[in-house]
Length: 130
Image (tube, rainbow, N blue to C red; front, side, top):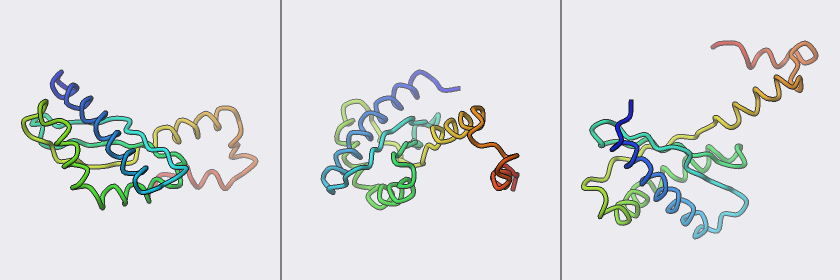
């Protein structure tokens, strides 16, 4: 269970990391890709923060994640500059793609009958456990 301090630091980091990433995308001239930070989980010792990003269109997720990991240290530095009055020590940032929206969408399609495995047996392959 997250403490209030972890939640507060997570909220501060979520806002600032989102601002820094969106500013970096604008500076790089990237058009048509929307990146939002959906959640930030901070460990109990406040040393590591897991940053979950949602990318639209979803097909660009892997590319955006690799770009963000390439400039990870610059992002951390800029966020540290923004939060220097709020945090004593800047946590290490790890980035992940949050695909929960696509997962919810696939469940909705399955419920509505748009993805019927009886009509399209190829869908069953996606549902098998590996």
